[in-house]
Each structure stands twice: as C-alpha cells, then as structure tokens.
View 1 (cartoon, helix red, strand yellow):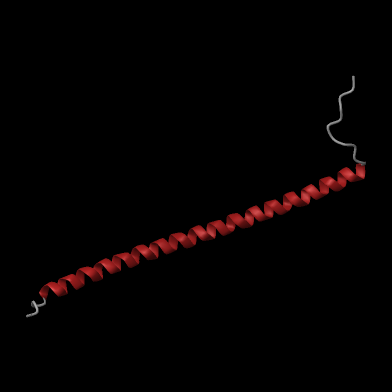
View 2 (cartoon, rainbow, N blue to C red):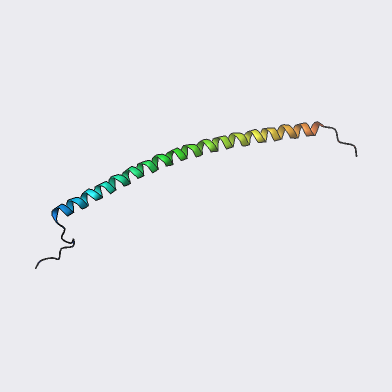
Length: 80
C-alpha cells in the first residue's frame, strides 16, 4: 500500500528554486533580526542615558528648591 505523497510533485529544478528562495528569505530574516537587535540595544543605551540625565536633573532641581526655601525663610515678612 503506497502512502500519499504530502508534497505535490515539483520537478527537481523547481525544488532547487524553491529551496534557494527559502534560503534567501531566511538570510533576509536573519539580517533583519540582527539589525533590530542592534537597534534595540542602541535604544536601551539611549534610554539608560536619558534616565541618568533625568535623575541628575531631578537632584539639581531638588537642591535648588532647598536653597530657594532657605533664602525665602531668611527674608523678612512683608508689611501689609
């Protein structure tokens, strides 16, 4: 009893053409994946740097607020 062939019959040169096309698609996908990974890593580095700058700026704002509060507390009350 012969088993049914799951693949349609493709001439030998047709199979080679299909395999070559799949190999090109695979290579393209691998290249795109690598490019996306590199871009993702660059974005992660940029985000980390932006977060560090944000933290530093927040600290400077808090220091300025404390100095301003200290100056305001030393000012005499305004007469109304």
